[in-house]
Length: 399
Image (cartoon, helix red, strand yellow):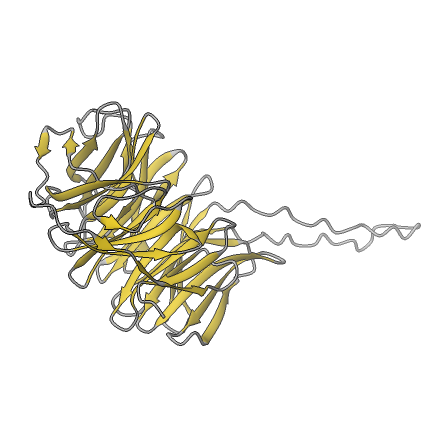
């Protein structure tokens, strides 16, 4: 998740910027209260499709399976589906495309091989010994798996990409041009795309010193990736202890743009990013932790930026002409009145198009943001954890 914004962002590529926010200090906004609702037990992620929210969780029975639950705006359950092919499968991330298809990426095991029985005809067995049938060992979850589901939850297609080890999947993005998936495979960060049901070859960039956290797809079929790195990538060296990175990978798999975001003697990372290139992530300098939020142009040129004190993860969202930052906040924030939490608490900050704070919403009892979504019927909706790990859904509108 992310930390809050500061007043300068240094780009190791030699690019620097002054804070473009107006010199005149804006009036402080008063914190408002949002609304919190129960999410299905065990929820690990969700996506909004029209008036419905689709939640997923992993369960363990005879095998590991994925359960998806659709709940409408009134809180009524519309349907529940289980992805169960008979072997172990786990879901890691979920998204939807503009056609209403739901996409889940994760991993699955190879189907167990059934050995043909050996004939015992003609073999003497005077003691009538019964040979126990051995149960096959569970195959490793070494297939990167992408499930395409209809808006009603039925699995429309399953796409497999065999790997040598369990793939760690951190992000997914779907558009009319295909699906992009990022994560870590064999200790290396990777990007893989699926176009028209066919996986391309994984594109590996960097080593275990680099991490990919979030991905979006662009109209030209390219992918934008947000993460961090403590090694030289594409000829650009580390400027801080660890730098946040933004990179664009073309449809052909080449890096067409790379920008490093760094701070002196600091560790930085971009952990959330959206299609409008609104990104956020932690800036750690010694014992000081902040969350940075920056709006970049299509060419990764910073347009506005801010840092705020924080205590944990952050998530960004661009919607309805505004920018949103959900953070785990543990102290007062300049520009926001009546906000002095005694313990890490969830706060959602709303910015206008120029990066000026225009609203702040508190969600008492919640701590760590997991996701932000938007729809015209629901407005801004999010998923967050409380201190005991319980996951709830929230909105920015009070009841």
